[in-house]
Length: 329
Image 1 (tube, helix red, strand yellow):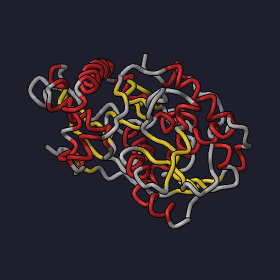
Image 2 (cartoon, rainbow, N blue to C red; image 1 turned 90 degrees about the horizontal axis):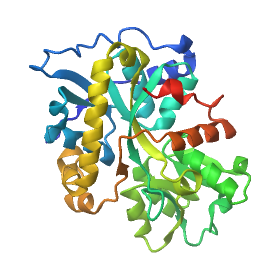
Image 3 (tube, rainbow, N blue to C red; image 1 turned 135 degrees about the vertical axis):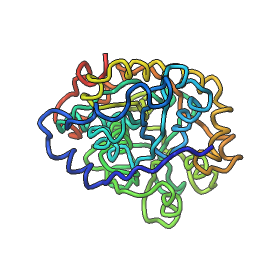
Image 4 (tube, rainbow, N blue to C red; image 1 turned 90 degrees about the vertical axis):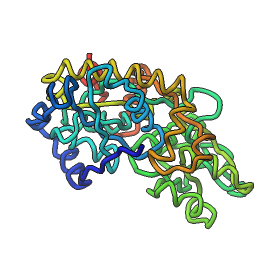
């Protein structure tokens, strides 16, 4: 069942492309990827970059259910080292499409890379139990987001949706967001480091969130997505401007296939989650009980507009992203 193939995408290249400005366009060559008809009978082959995380399993579900084939596509999944690392792979045509967090795409556009959002993919929960949250020790004295001022919160990467939403949640709670401190740490290490007192709070997604809260000495500070942007998109699908303009028919097929795939995966979450043990080696019991994002291919324009506003307010980006140019029409 496991069909992910590793793609060697250097973080150094990602940083170079993101920081160089790139003159406002993608490097040439994205359209010449072999993604023409005839590569698999009547099917058009496309490569899609995904992260080795649970929500990516919807792509495997769509492949296994024949949804992409129904739309004339033969999809090959490639694993990327991170959302930012997949951007240059998409830009240069190593990958035709990728699934990653929208802030990475907006940041790339802000730096001059011509990236296009094709569809939505997954969204956090607007209410109830969310799929990521901030956890601290019960004796930490941290009872709300404002109490994080002057303390260190661990996130998996800086200048991403984790620290951005936490900063805004603290500001809404009456704190000076500039007084919050963040450090980078792998999700798998966070709970142990919190217990040892090496960090004051941790921002973790599922299944790490449920595991951390199962410790009687830990407590939930809150769900920052729900405070900052209820229903915040956690991932979108994207491609390069060169590919979007040069392969319009393929992009349309991919968008239609994603709409059907994510609708089916959302309606049959138990079946999709049943693929996780083979897809990424997750324990079957953990997979069955996993809280999953909402899969939805509609581009959440309102939430993306708000995300753009916050990136400018907290100096993540230099200007408000122009979604009319970034989202494939």
